Length: 151
Image 1: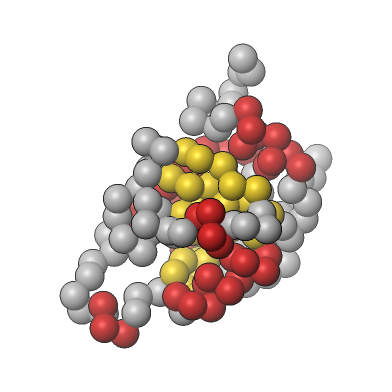
Image 2: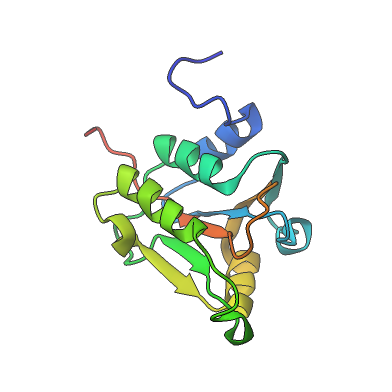
């Protein structure tokens, strides 16, 4: 066991986070996200039984966000036919979590059209974490920043 590491981070996930370099991308997919299909060229880690907010908070505890891009956190935006029909209160939770770990707060969060999001995952994801999150549109893409000597 290690001290100060969130228990939700499995040894496999910790190893992957450590192996990621600056600007590498990790995706936390909700329970409906096609993790195996989208992550066929990435490392796929199962985190069944865990929600995205808990995983996001734990990952951001040990991994900085990229400061060289405007939106190092990206969410899948609603499809036009879902606008006004589907609510995404989980996004507010994400904004609070990001603000806890990054001084830019919710300004660090962008939105990507659904099919563009899938395309980005297939092209850029180093790792896809398959969660058990039941909220819809709960997928999060994170771009890793630089670890410095400063706290």
